Image (cartoon, rainbow, N blue to C red):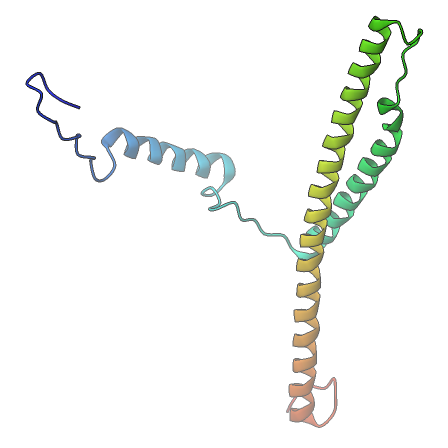
Length: 158
């Protein structure tokens, strides 16, 4: 950048801190989220589920995967369209080619969705397994402590 005399200009210095309008906007968003959602918006895309919610979610995602797999099988004829007329019929060939490309696009999208759902199921299963392992470990530790205090498993210490 230069001024009329050909001298270089320094870029404007960025302002530090929030402007008044940004502060008002942030306060409005905070107030709205408290009113509408009952609390501030969650940070960094994290959420929590209890074990029953995770099991229910796993069941739903698994059923969704089954449905996607069925849809992929049902869609196979979408990539096997043949022209109705002879091989010399350019319009028929063009229609068949378009239909086959559309079918291939559908199947590709379906397979991408299957990969995503499988990945989500794997992650959810991993979390459930880790939760189960921690519960089992805690139960075993509790039983060892309880047994060492009482001399018998399953009884409270005196």
